[in-house]
Image (tube, rainbow, N blue to C red; front, top):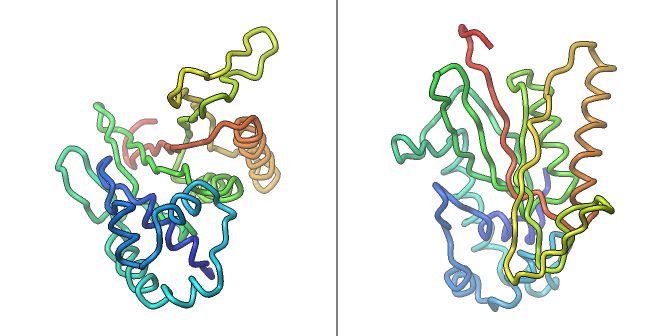
Length: 224
């Protein structure tokens, strides 16, 4: 996968571990010699492309920082119980343009665990592909998502309950759980993918943002 300079910057800008930002914008601006205004544009617009002169100037330090960060989080997830970033053989995230640090939540019963990733700065197709990769892995049974409603955007698409978020702060709501199981081979995979595409696109096309995605895994040797 070939990454653009914007992808690498968005990975660092979006990086959170245990709910805490890994990098501050001012820190990254000083590290690469670019303005915080430029970083805000990269962060808020997934399609934003840096000027070629800027890319050439920041390439070496950006490549190193992005590479070091991705290596540090590879195959690991944040465990809130231990407060540590831990290696886990139970999952493997695909390599993504904006690479998240997942958080694992174990069910009280111990029979399942939930893998949560921040995906606010991913493109719509990246969110769809991530869920489809979870479906293809056959590890996960369901998914949920947290949807961000920016200021001035409708909180509901229903004509009878069209509420506009004009309170001056972002609002959030949850969708799901939605199935990640297919019982009819390739035709079933196609059907579930279409359902994922419809659900993600419905909210994103309305100006809202899928900010977090969680996938639920039933652990082996335990009843579902």
